[in-house]
Image 1 (cartoon, rainbow, N blue to C red):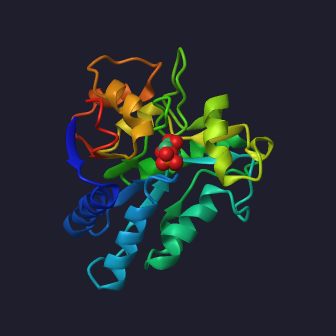
Image 2 (image 1 turned 60 degrees about the vertical axis):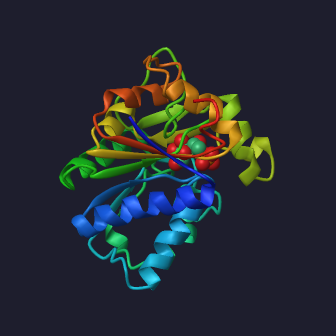
Amino acid sequence: MNKIICKSRQEAARVGALIIARQIWDKPDSVLGLATGGTPVGMYAILAEMYRAGDLDFSRVTTFNLDEYYPISRENEQSYDYFMWKNLFSHINIDKSRVNLPDGGAADPLAACAEYERKIKAAGGIDLQLLGIGHNGHIAFNEPAQELSLRTGVITLTEQTIKANARFFASDEDVPKKAVSMGIGSILQARKILMLAFGEDKAPAVKKMFSGAVTTQCPATMLALHPDVTAVLDEASASML
Ligand code: F6R
C-alpha cells in the first residue's frame, strides 16, 4: 500500500483530486467508484472547480457509488444519492445515465444488488475506486465481523456507525439501520484504489490498516491484498504510523 502524507486535509484533498483527474485525463471514459461521507467533500469541490476551469471533462465518465442506506428514497436529503448530486454531480458535466448508486428503495433488494454487480461488470469493471475509512476500520459499509460479504448486499449497520452517521440526521433513531453496500470482493476488483483518511480520530483505524495483518475485524486491512492502493492521509490521521 502506497501512502502520501500531506500537511493538511486541504492539501490531501488536492492530491486526491489530482489522482482522480489524472485517471480521467488518461482514460476519458473511466469507470469511477465513488464514496460519500465527510472525507471526500473537499476533494469533490476541487474536482468541480477543475471542471469549471475547463480542465476536466466528465461527459464520458461512469460512476458507481459504494453504498446507500436501506430503506431510503432517492429524494430523501440524507440519502447518498442526494449527497452525490449536491456535492459533485450537479456541478460537473456528468451524463445522468452513467451515474449509478445502489437502490435504497428497491422492493427486492437482493435482486437489485445482483443487478448492480452485473452493471459494474457490463461497464468493464471499476478503474479507480475511492474509499474512506470508518473509525472501526469499515470500508464502504463492510463492518467488522467474523465474515465479510464478497459482493454487493444488504448490511446491518453497527451501533458505532449509526452514531457516527447521526450527525447528518435529526437523531440516532432517524438513521436507517441497514444499508446496501458493495462487498469486499467488489472493491478489491477495482484496478486501482484511492483511500482518503483525515483527522486524528481516524489515526487508530489507519494504524490498523497498515499493520500488515489481514483481519475481517478491520475490513480496511483487506486492502493489503490489492496490488495498487494509494492512501492519501493528512498528518493527523497518519500520526500513529
Ligand atoms: C461512504 C462509505 C463509508 C465512509 C466512512 C468514512 O460511502 O462508504 O465507508 O467512507 O464511513 O466516513 P467519513 O468520511 O464521514 O468519515
